Amino acid sequence: MAERYSSFTPGGTAWLLQRVTAVFLIFALAFHFFLLHFVNHAWEIEFAGTQARMQDLGYFITMILFLITATFHGVNGVYNALINQGLTGTPRKVVLAILVLASLALVGQGIWVAIEMRGGLIL
Amino acid sequence: MSQSYNRGLIEDFGRWKEFSAGMWAWIFHKFTGWVLIGYLFTHIAVLSSALAGPEAYTETLQGLEALFVVRLLEVGLLAVAVFHILNGIRLLMVDLGIGLDAQDKSFYLSLLITGAIAVASVPTFMTDVGF
Image 1 (cartoon, rainbow over the protein chains, first blue to last red):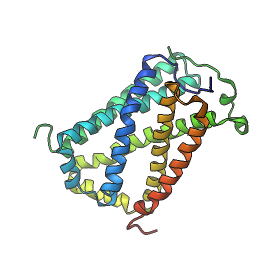
Image 2 (image 1 turned 90 degrees about the vertical axis):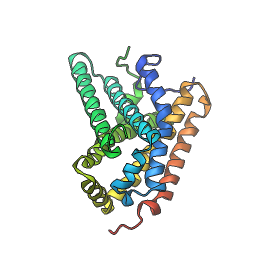
Image 3 (image 1 turned 120 degrees about the vertical axis):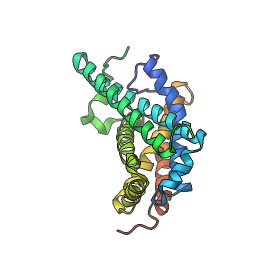
Image 4 (image 1 turned 90 degrees about the horizontal axis):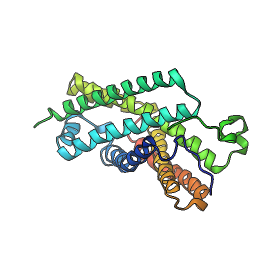
């Protein structure tokens, strides 16, 4: 077989979820970059434009899903890369706890900001 | 489940001259992944200016966008994101056992397309910004 390098143990739950989120993120990240840098230009962004986009329910839900999957994919990637470098025992548990708390804080903050941009959850 | 396992040469960065395409793809994927997750935390922090009101949000974003270094970093971020996406598709193909014989060529192609897109994006990213 051809050479294969990965920070994940093939077949595990983390391995599967990393790939499922990857498929979604391929489209979400490309869409996000294209929309906010090439269709709309970042230097022209104003709150009103952001709010108009966020008031579209489909866009709002897509951005929330983007935030959650990107956070999971990124933090899970970091965690497995650290395990791959030899992180074990108590340090591994401490790192996992810190990463889980950081992820929850990031997603919580992101959702709060998204709702503020939208002008409320229910319009 | 997850455990540390030694894959030999790739753990020994001192022997980077002996690395093959697959090893470089693995290293680049890790590096771009670290950049992207780091950026995500920064991105949400910047967007949180919306919590201080519409004016604060607009001023923060337009203030950052007025800086040449920010535009330059955006080109870098695009390159990092494009490579991570393309190599990610390549990794999904490898996991599915598709095109294993061409996995080195697909890495070089990922690099080539990343470079082309990054260069082509420069005029867009550098619009209306002074040095």
